[in-house]
Amino acid sequence: KRALLLVLEHDAPPEARVRPLVELMDLGALMQDRLLFERGRRELDRHLDALPPDEQVEYQMKLGRGLVGFDRQDEGERHIERAVALAEPHGLGARLFRAEAMLEEARERRDQAVPATAATPEAVPAPELQSTIESLEALALGG
Image 1: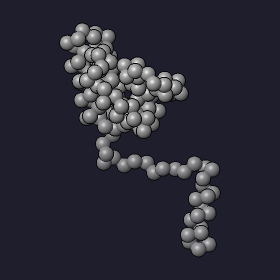
Image 2 (image 1 turned 45 degrees about the vertical axis):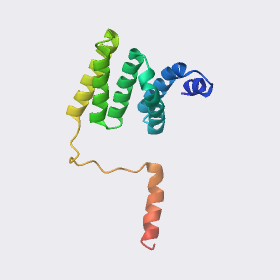
Image 3 (image 1 turned 90 degrees about the vertical axis):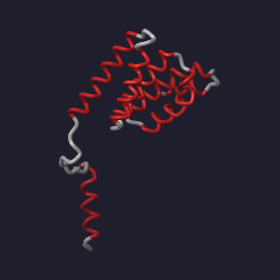
Image 4 (image 1 turned 120 degrees about the vertical axis):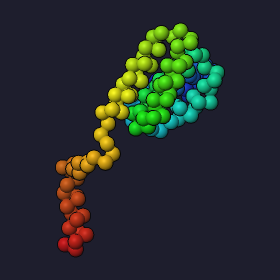
C-alpha cells in the first residue's frame, strides 16, 4: 500500500497513475477498506475513457470483484460482465478467461449466500471486554 501511495504522491502523468490506482482499489477491496476502494474508483472513473482496452478490462474486473466483496452483488456482476464484453472484441484472451472465471465465482457466491431473513447468531463480546460490560450493566441497574 505504501509503495503504491508513494508512486501516486509524485506528479506522474495520468497514464502512469492508472496501474497503481487500480491496484490500490483492489487492495482496498481485499482489506475491506471501503475508503481506499472508493477513492481509487472515483479517480479512475474520471479517466476511464482514456484507458487502453486492456486496462479498462482490468479495472472493470477489479471493480466488480470489489463491489461483490462489499455485498453489492448485482453492481459487481455488471462490471465483470462489462470486462467480458470489452475483452472479447479486443482479443484479450487471458483477461477474458479471468473475467469469465471471476463472473462464475461471483454467481456461485450469490447462489451460496444465506438469505437475509435467516437468523444471525448473537455477537459474543471479546473476553477482555466482558468485565467492562458487566460493570456498565451493574451501574445501569443502580448497583
